[in-house]
Image (tube, rainbow, N blue to C red; front, side, top):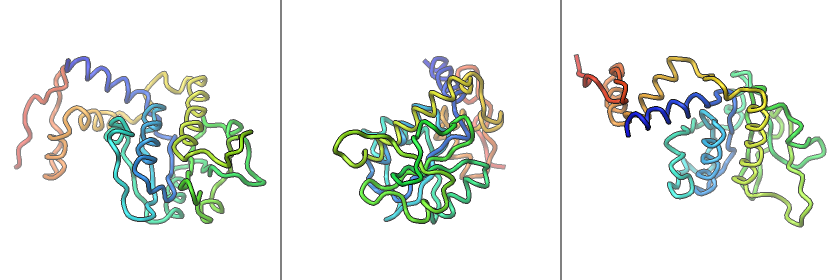
Length: 220
């Protein structure tokens, strides 16, 4: 079972996309956050980003199906800081909203480094996000509802990004730095030992072919 699990985790990490992410702008309902992370995991998002409106939001294990442990969330104090951080990573920042300048979400080239800003369901993205984004994107709708649930909108956009990236062969090989790949693989395989090492500032010990630790870490 360990070899099978190790192989599955390696295969999953090899599909992770370090230059595709979401930035959640004030999303405050745990089930929405959890569902977004579930979609992120499904399309290979390596890391999500968020600005909390009312304090850190917890992840619902039922809604996320465990995705919260596979897709970490980096918090930013303000959406301005979050967008600046993504710009510093050379990402194109697209905010999902209806506006006169919005383009069909399928018109965006998601094979380029991209961050998708999603606002809370009732209030939508903040004015700062709207002003600082590089593009506004919208999901065409022909029904009577004015918008989709934020987690549904995230899934629709992310799976279009996956379609484009898959066609471009971006899932065919690992796109993670080798050191990052091995670090995350260890943390996935041995989360308790990884936490122990981080608390004591110890290097991670090597893993054998089954993903088991060959020698327990020791202080000093």
